[in-house]
Image (tube, rainbow, N blue to C red; front, side, top):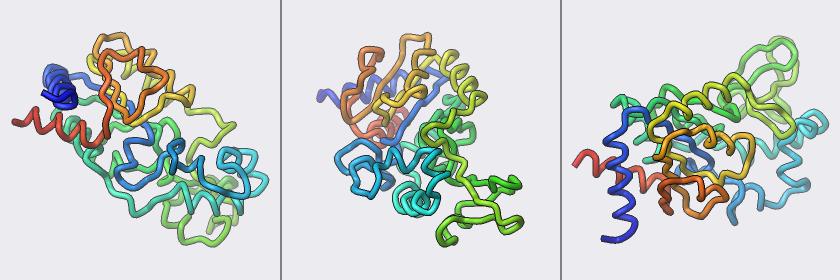
Amino acid sequence: MKKMETDVKKLSELIRESDNIVFFGGAGVSTESGVPDFRSQDGIYNQKYKYPPEMIISHSFFVKDPEEFYRFYRDRMVYPEARPNEAHRVLARLEELGKLRAVITQNIDGLHQAAGSRNVLELHGSILRNHCMHCGKSFDLDHIMASDGVPRCDSCGGMIKPDVVLYEEALDMGVMQRAARYISEADLLIVGGTSLIVYPAAGMIDYYRGDKLVLINRDATRRDDAADYIIHGNIGEVLGCAFSEIQA
């Protein structure tokens, strides 16, 4: 039996035996939906702009040059045509079956919810939520995309900011604490589509106390030594095959 087939069979067995699964995912979960990741050859960080992307998506740059921020944001951070892929669908199905307790994601695209997942903890916020920095009024993504230049509040004229965590901004401690609790209580932790480089989010897996940590990623990560099982492959393909095995 080929190694991938063996890995998928083992994953399906782990899922079948577990009823407190937590999934922790990163940008690789959405690449199969056409949303680029950050650090691959074609990723956002390797695109050519007037300023480095890391600078553009920082809080200080947003305040200093919101016009340029939004030009980059609409061009490279928002993909309204993206649709859930097999990974999103399988996770939603596992939640529906009562096996998966939570999805913890570093992504901001809302695709887990679009697939039907209900308990999604967004460590870095969401492009679907936006608010006026002056009066606090909420706006959806359509308002941002329909605006020219810097989007403004239609009530007070204040500048609108996406509810995403920019560089130099702190993560929501309430969300972090809930994520840590779910991970610490999980009997199976599946980590997928993340290089586990960005902290503090990447450090979340250290809260896991069990012995069934499955790491699914196309490439090796800096935290491979923490995993009990490692599967190299596309997250959608791996989860899809494992779920098909369960249903067989």
